[in-house]
Image (cartoon, rainbow, N blue to C red; front, side, top):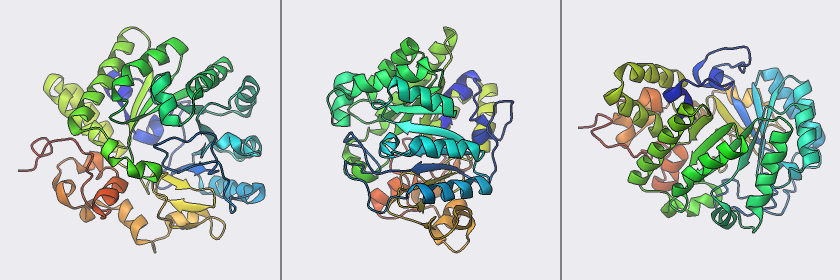
Length: 389
């Protein structure tokens, strides 16, 4: 994650401790060797999003972890020192025991967050989520009503999600609006900023497309490199505009660390002093952290380097503890991801900004080139910008 609001406007957030190793009274305790865990706790979903990395649908997996095995897994995460568990899916609210598992997580000492499509968050559900103590509820929207509903595969999804957002805010929960950028909707970014201002949404996360799940067929629908630059320019301009108007929001981009380099290079031209501070923060963050500071577990208990990398598993939590799987040195891919710079190929291997990018998203390289260590095709920086002659 690239915190545009922190880098441009010095807006601090609780997640800064995870990104930059900083501490504050409300920060999240972090360790360099223990990841945030995205638990895709179900493969069921009431929508049919065209870009779903989990390929979620109507059916529940026959081998989905039950309540007892889920609690054992959560206990293992707590014992390992995992700082945050993010309940995701599919749609996690389709699990009958979700609230029970979230409450158990909080009682075990974990910080809990929710990633939802928002359509099932009634006022009663929002009250119950708030009472449990969810630190954040992430709700996905991919544009205004017509565009969002086309992406989500259901008419009425936008209005239902907006009602879910309002119910969360009414119950004093921090809401994160999540938007996946494609060539069909990148011009909708200003509308999402307007919506955040109107509704009192605290956080905006703009995801670059990961070529996994159903999105593996959408490579041709990713934005072009010039459009990526345009999208990031728009995000930066609107973040600064909110800050100037006294409406600071936390704004992040996700799944493309070219954004950090691009922002640094822009600042280097107009504000060199600020650029140096930004470089230090990006270097502390370390770039892409798949297999390092972020990990994922799917509904059946398989452990993945991140939530986009489901075809590959390093082990299963029903057979071994998560911490044992995560710290094992026997898995070549997991070990490679933790020290990947010497394995990277193509433009990535010669980039002078590896310390702040770390080779970007490996899943895209594998999807396009069939080689996990190839260059990331979504890097929109020129050879000159990254120091390649």
